[in-house]
Image 1 (cartoon, rainbow, N blue to C red):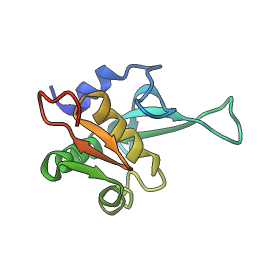
Image 2: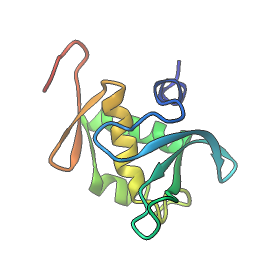
Image 3: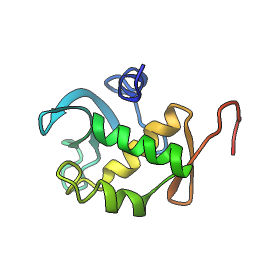
Image 4: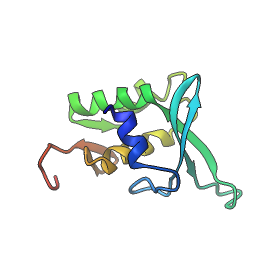
Length: 124
């Protein structure tokens, strides 16, 4: 099963993304591609959360980085994904994607980055 399907199953509508105040809305579409859509708090209108999402290709690209560099860092996200056509204007996708990695037991969060969690390890 690919990472996108794993994430979609692990975070059904209403599920909280670990370590965030984000809540999964479910599957959707962004720029013609399947996406995981989530809500983030809206400080101006607390009863109407903002809707954000990241695409399957963004998640796969981030996973490749996590596996090859053994980390998923904000600097890499900003240079590789945040300036792209999809995540532009959605810097919260860094935290959302990292939270998915934590929830899938692929990474731990450490001081603003997500570090690869080796298979079989309980904690880093």
